[in-house]
Amino acid sequence: MEQVSKSKQIMINMAASMISTLVSLAISFVLSPIIIDKLDYEAYGFMTLANDFVSYANIAAMALNSMAGRFITVSLTKGDYENANKYFNSTMYANIFIVAALFIPCTLVVAFLDRLVKISPALIPDVKLLFALTFLNFMVTIISTTFSTATFAANRLDLQAFRSIESQILRSAILIVTFFFLPIHVSYMGAASLAATVYLVFTYVHYTKKLMPQIEVSRKHFSMKKVLEILSAGIWNTVMRAGQTLTNGLDILITNLFIGGTEMGYISTSKTIVIAINTLYETISAVFTPSLTISYAKENKEELLEDLKSAMKMTGFFANIPLCFMIAFGIPFYTLWLPRSGSVSDGNVIGIIYILTLLTMFGTIVGGVISPLFNVYTVVNKLKWNSIVTLVMGVLSTLIVFILLGTTSLGVYCVAGTSTILGIIKNMTFTPMYAAHCLDIPKRSFYPVIWRYIGVSCLMAVVFFEFYKQLPGGSWLWLFIDVVICGMVGCIMNLWLLFGKKERAMLKDMAQKILYRR
Image (cartoon, rainbow, N blue to C red):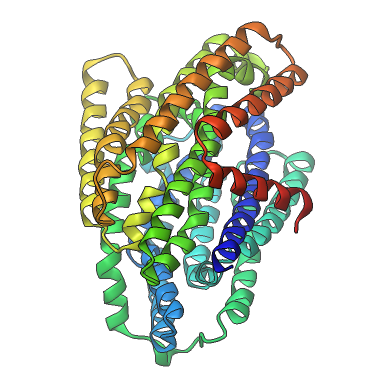
């Protein structure tokens, strides 16, 4: 009965999280061409660059917040409320200190932004305001992060997902009013995101009181020893994040500084779809993390491994269908989606963005199924070697990009493609074998799922290409019909070639949750 209840909760979490993610992606899908049309590619690129700068700053908080949920959840599961209070309060007050320490550097970045990156003179005030609001949003998020662990610890990510949907509705309402009734400014994105985050903060506090009544917010529970304990475990996540930043987090910045603002917009536009797909399958992957953590705390290794393999198939399902569709239908999609005024609609631009999308997206071929394995390192608290390898790959990627920029005419293509190639190499060799090592199982344990996923994805891409040759296009109606046909065929292929009985039952349960909310 416990297992059935647990499986149902996983599917409730998954359905809710997926809806939340799709709402967010739909907003981005609608607004992106409007921003490009009104302000051009350069302004659109700064939206991504602002978030990249936040990711740089977040490296400082990564060591603490990446592991806090794990320590709090394990303590609560074991009934050790004293330590749970110490972990919670120690993390919260440490986050306040981190925000205070980052305030001056963030302020200086905004003040001297036009000296750090290349910005067209007409965009400087708007881009600076965008960065200021984005940094402020980041600080509010960091302070509230500890409270967001309540739904994680209780394995009720569905509650957080539904509140996230409400926050996205608030965000979209603000953007609709500003973009359609006021002069267009890219800084509206920062303001709307900040308002949505503030709303979520109130919900996090509410759920902390409701789901974790054992937790008391008080300075008396603060323990520097607990902070250092969490930091000692999470420091390797900081190293890993630094490696990830070097691998693909510098793409926009390098393009801005060494190639050009317009090209920065191209690669930012190409990343919109890739980020959407990555966000979708990473959301599904994250749904399994509380369950894996609880299984580990109960020392139920068999259950943990079973859930992990199911998670790999589920994330693969949500990755390969949109991936293969974009490979086959990318050109007609971009032709319809991107604005048609002036040079923006030029076929060469669409071709460039399509190639950049493919170069960036090929990493998803492996990443879609590999994503849940990264949870293993956090769950078992063995982060060191994955972090070191990720950092080495990041340094190598950055060096190769600069070498190629200086010796070839590949330009923005080498920026997009280098990190993808190195990522595939790492995720096909080190990642599955080290995850198996952490669980003390044979090194080849995860490869059957990985190879099956890749085989199904390659077959799916061939089938979708045949659809592209046979089906008519040229309008949103036909593209929608293409999406429906490819989606249905992709689902059938995954159901029968990738999934087992357990995953088919889980997907059926999730569909029922979405349709009937029961």
